[in-house]
Image (tube, rainbow, N blue to C red; front, side):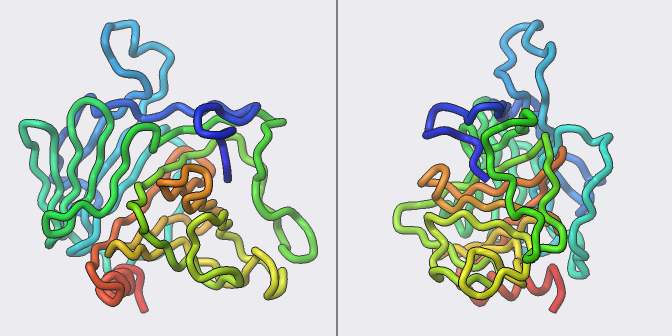
Length: 281
């Protein structure tokens, strides 16, 4: 689902408020996966007292349910009913969180997630090599007008017993793509194997085998850079794979929260092994 008109402007009827900085970083021992980092990410840089008025704030939580896997949860309103995620039979407690002079980090096996203080910057490293990250204008709460110029996804019809419900609020996240990095996966698809440049809607529909619709959609992709990403939402997930911002993968869901897992390799087999260990065979 595209929210922007080109690189600089939003589409008519769309307002996006992005995480601007890591204003406060806390270490917790009672996270959903044990040790965790919780980051307060306002949608405006806080320079004076008035900057805290009438502005949404995002809460970003980092934890690890399995060695080599980082759970990232971004929330706008925690009080709203949570979308149930997929069963995760392999989830446990595998991360070690600590605060540093310039921010905080979560370590799980050879995978390290770092968040810096100041301007928003979340990076993922494997054995000292940067895999991907979330930088400027990458995490957002999006509000859309009733007549916003966006494509909400598959429609009601013969192919889908239920089309994607029209929603007004969305959360989206973007992760960097490196030069020459290729993306695979997202379940059963009938187009090119490499997903770069494609819009992919995760929504099961009986559209035949020669269309963008598919019977077995899976919100998981595998990168040639040695990691995978799993979006933990069984509803409609819209992926823009280098198609809205050419140097990023974007994924969005309706509601007030989005949760995804960054899964380390470095080989495709190791990524899939960890993904299967987390979600079940």
